[in-house]
Amino acid sequence: MPIYEYRCKKCQHQFDLFQKITDEPVKECPECGGPVCKLISSTSFILKGSGWYVTDYGRGNGGNGSNGRGKVEAGESTAKKEKKKEALSAAKDKAAAA
Image (cartoon, rainbow, N blue to C red; front, side, top):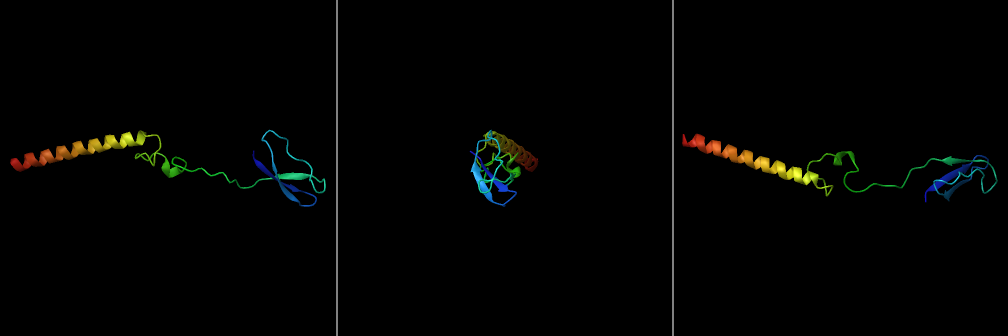
């Protein structure tokens, strides 16, 4: 359940409440009965792992265990590089023999 912060407009008492998202906001201060307003505070929610940061997207090497597609693509590009190396080597051998 989320924790919501409130502050009393009359006595400035600040308090936290565990509430469901569907619960109605609190309207009265538990200390003085005055009107309260809901505060916006920073969250403690942290996303960890690959794919959550802008530099993780579209890596091509698959990051550190994303969905595996990057690993297949990296394997295909390695195979293409090997073919290019073989073709260059064969061309050099042919040129040297002539």
